[in-house]
Amino acid sequence: MWEFLKQLTDPHSIIEYGGLWLLLFVIFAETGLLVGFFLPGDNLILLAGILCKAKPDLMRVGYFELVFLMSLAAIIGNTTGYWFGRKAGEKLYARKDSWIFKQKQIEITKTYYDKYGGNLTLVMARFLPVVRTFAPIIAGVIKIDFLKFMFFNVIGALAWVLSLTAVGYFLVQAFPQITDYMGYIFIALIILTALPILRIVLKKKKEP
Image (tube, rainbow, N blue to C red; front, top):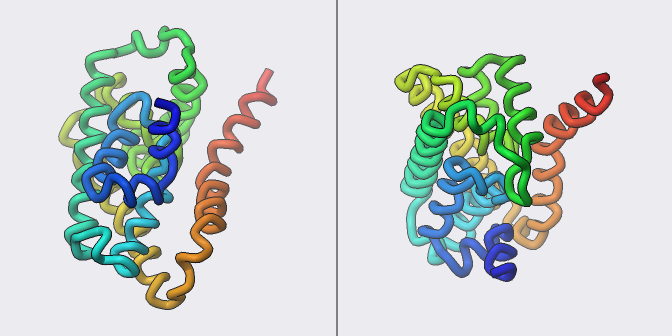
């Protein structure tokens, strides 16, 4: 079980052993399931863009098909999260902490809603670990209009998938040896996306 979970957090393992369908499931799960916050969405999409060009036999789909399928998985994932939030309602705020769920995750996401509003948060959240998992759930809890939610859901999914796959796809064309340095790239991407979350956590700790 732990070995399987370990593989799910490794972008290389997800694509190498699970192929396209596991890739799509992980993107769906990170944006649609409460337990998906630990999955490596950013790194996975970036790697998919690189491998689509560097190892087309592994991906088995073209660039535009890959972007479409990953965007669709992200849209369906967010929609699932939204309806979970609608069903769970404010009971989610009273849920006790567990090894999977922490109220801190909800608090961080709610901070973005309070600061940027629901529409902008749904787009920004795609690029923020943890927040992208809980943003659609909170949207459901506070009952954002579904059509409005879907509009920003689609915009956010396309922006997230297109930007990261494009970086990976065109980067490997300019620097073919980049696949030898994926570990460093993943670490850099993790740090960059985690900085806004870390800032909020540190700010909340300073609050009386």
